[in-house]
Image 1 (tube, one colour):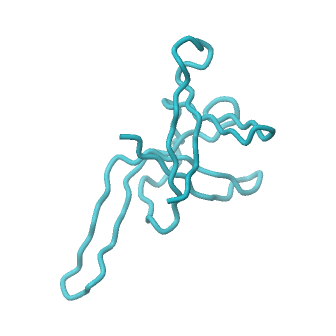
Image 2 (image 1 turned 90 degrees about the vertical axis):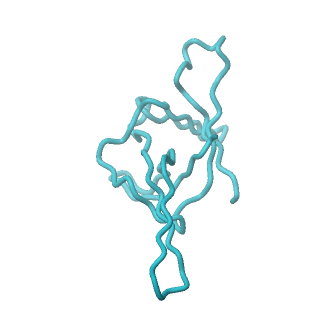
Length: 108
């Protein structure tokens, strides 16, 4: 299953997209309340340019390195802040792109 997300965030150089892989989805139900709360437990991709993330603005493409993780992260996110994404790997014949995935953002 390809279970990715991205969220808008603020970093030193301005606003940026953070890409995430979901590992667990928790649903909390409180006794006496009719609302349920969802919480995603996830790992964040590294945003370091050309190390964990590559941007090609002319093609509107973002690549993420699947094994590169952002070390300073909060592993939990509320689903109201996220947008859906999925990650497509390159063909095996592209040896120089091994481990890199294209992040495709879609409307939920």
